[in-house]
Length: 139
Image (cartoon, rainbow, N blue to C red):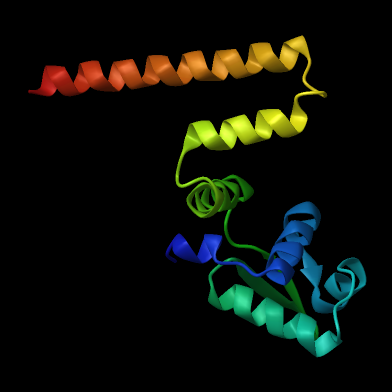
């Protein structure tokens, strides 16, 4: 499976994957009951087939039912979707994306939130420095 499939999802496919990650395993009928506004049961089955072709779902057979489950771990899918978001809306600029997220949540941010973000940045900076030192040692 190629990673570009993870980022090329329609809104409906995203809705389905959200349910799949939350529920872990569902039949087409269960999915139809959980995703609002699906036009028909056959539309549900079509989307499941598409997601399976994209390599995002797998299925097992229980009696006459197909039981679907995610084929890609949630973290990997989220990573790919985030990369697509960066490319599409922020010109691949991490600082623009972070600034937008902070602007959206600035009223909700606590001191602990700021502390965690600072720790994440410090850890990333340290890892980058270690990679640069290792690269310099290899030359």
